[in-house]
Image (cartoon, rainbow, N blue to C red; front, side, top):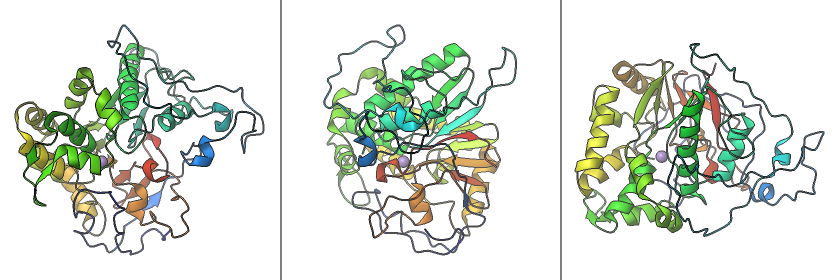
Length: 384
Ligand SMILES: [Mn+2]
């Protein structure tokens, strides 16, 4: 890994990664004040070694073996969401809780009704890695061993990109929808932003192979989705209630002085001068417009890296002055790409100690690169 703040050349995008040339449309001269916030709690990686650990093997690290439990696939509460017959195309490996160590922390207070809101958490890009999501939420004490909300009045924001690349995107959406219902019942909330992969996935479902106008020539949502990690079994399992939920996700939100957005781009400003205006514009577009407009929106929200380099803090300030907040918190650009540590020649997974704070400490990157053997990050805000 390069020292923070040093110059580096933007890496070549990995095959199939990225949708256009936005990896190379900037120059970089350094990152003012960039640093990692170390996450000290253990995490589970989806590295093959972690997935094949046998229950009989003592987990490395912990002094005591915790009782062996398995994180089940979540169950959608019948009273909240209509049950569907979901074909099980594959049986993703489960993660033994014993491998997580028995030190499970439940750091959130449980305020009485009428007290201040519960603690605020953000979750980076999940991209279908349901087991990693369950493990990360459980380790923070936000869900119990059965995958149900156990965080009381806590507030969780997912930063978008639930599907594609990983094994169970629909399972991730189902879990987040379930937690949203359970959190509301407990006096907290679980909310989510719309990422560019939501636009891509919805576009693939709605427009399929229909040609769209692209600067790179003829394209289609279905082809682009497949090229960027789309999993046919997710499309096969996409139901009307998923589409309704995904289509109504906000693109940006402001919470506790943090401006939450999926992509590290100022393209949101092209859709409105207030948070409500942006979200209304995106929802109206998804409701009324055609494939070309959807594609244009997808492309804008797929831009990245606006907060890097000398111009990064200025770009952040543009967003903060329009929408409010003192920091932006985003997903979308994997931290290993932001730091230039994505492709190590010896093939070792990228080192992601935790959320990445950069742009004169005005920006927090939360995509830990779970798709590239990094980490699925869950962080409590504010970070210091
Ligand atoms: Mn994204």
